[in-house]
Length: 438
Image (tube, rainbow, N blue to C red; front, side, top):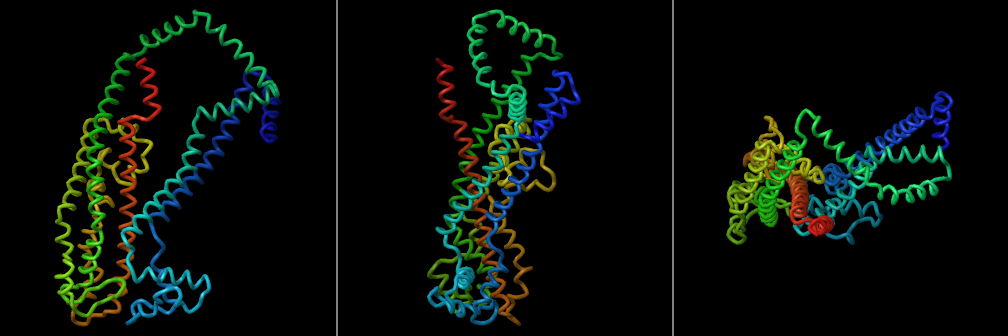
């Protein structure tokens, strides 16, 4: 405050008129508050971005390889899995550093179970939501009305120190007397009427147009809720069967059908009995799984959601819909729904159909597998060590993509909850509605 009072003293020395000096003081305080809040907002955004990136991406694969090599397991060498201890009790050294390296290296020889992946998703989603609190708090404090109010309070405290309570008491005593006077009400109504008549356009028509646009947007968003609910159920079914997709993709990448040997992160290549495993466990190829009813249902739900969002845009109420959806804007952006509410460009025509929601990365990696594994999967001159190392890295990346897909599903569920709450109302809106009816 001492620094602020020095600025006030400099203004009083330069400007002698109080009617000009007081607004200048308010402006100075507002500018200083705005600058401090801008810096705080940038720091909050940077913090949120850092947390979001760490939430979406697990630890780098190179770090895992380094930890594995430190305990004697070099991926790619024959029998490298036997060098990874089966339990922490078999670790050569019991220091915390070695136990950490062992826990990281164990990830190379197993896939994350679905139950653990779901718990990890919920934990990381909660962490990402908590990281938004500083950004939202600073954004709320950066409102112009609050900045002007705080600036006026600081100047008022400087101009009339220690008199705040007395002045508030005087204002409170004057309120009943002002309320008894009826002259201000007709003057206010007359002022509003003159303002409405002298405008170039009809104020009533503008209010009516805004109300009609809000009604149309609310109706379209209520229909969108039904579409997103179907998409939520379809995603849930696909994620429940993600183990089958994961195993089928690794079979395709390792060339199991051609070589007659299956591959898994925990055991590597199995020399034989691939055909027996197919008959016993019913493993299917990825092409067949992508044609299963649950995956087709997901594609239909994605198409319906994209078409409905495009319909909102074509009706010209996308800006109204985006204003209504502003509390969940980050979730909308994460799910790539915003591109359908704007006029789509050539780079965004695919939209959510090829996003993490649509699990389009499955088809994409299936189509590009030859580039990564084709020259290693040939029977002649096959390098099993190098292929095994590539497959371990691919299995790790696959878990990361599944995790990101589940995180996107959490964002979709938050949008659904927001629309559902808006449709059915909150405790506050129900209370206000009840008071209005009375």
